[in-house]
Amino acid sequence: MCSSQTRDIFVSAVLHAIHTTCLFRNSVRLGSDVVSLHGAKAKIVAAVALSGSVSSGKCLPSDSRLLNSFMISPHHRHVAAIITVV
Image (tube, rainbow, N blue to C red; front, side, top):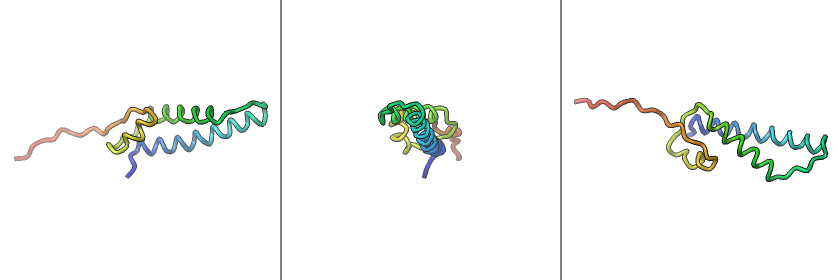
């Protein structure tokens, strides 16, 4: 099962990877710049972390490992007050 915040992270990771690849490819082709793989990876990770932090999705407790790897604060679901029924 995938939470909405995790889904947002996966979508942003794919989109930022495609965007960064195109950006760096065009930079090399048109500007004769030297681009490092480490720089591209750092740019993607930073963009995914920013996108995950501003996501309006909610996470599950099992998503904490993925969120911690990107240093994203989890957005937990709010549970309504539990009323005891007698």
